[in-house]
Image (cartoon, rainbow, N blue to C red; front, top):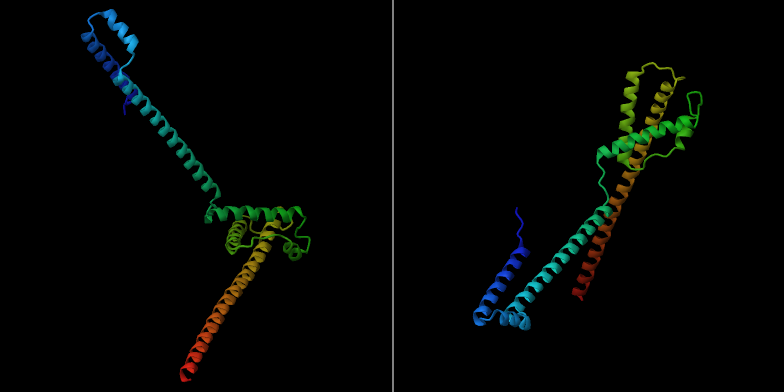
Length: 226
């Protein structure tokens, strides 16, 4: 889109008006020297004064409007950025899987670095000291990844000696699977208890409300008999 050339058009209009003004004065004052003196003494007449002041006012208002729009735009962008920074990112299931895959690797590495091997028979007490996710979705995703890794290892390194690093890794994965399965079952039981407690509390509240309404009806009935 070509530029509008608003300023250039305004200047051109001013020049045209100035030429017309000079021509008009020239027709009135035939002496060129007198015309020049007149223009020098009178400067601009009211028409040109209004023209220039109006143009200046328009330009000033346009500049203020442009500045205000820029400030509002900047403020809006800042507000949007602030909202985006404060809004909690919604984690997808793919994000969870990626996070739990790293979690699995950290668990396996931790058990290896702490010296747990097939030669040390302290698997359960040691695994109980490890930190596992609390959320049920995290646990179920972790279990899914562990099982996938176990199947891969079993198919790839079937019959590997536990004395080797690969065999020990497969043993650790099996122990972790059992641990996570136990945690999932315990978490489901705990959630069911909380759910049942909520249901029971709701029922108790409804019963108490019904008894209160019945008592209020009985009081109204006794009052009517009197």
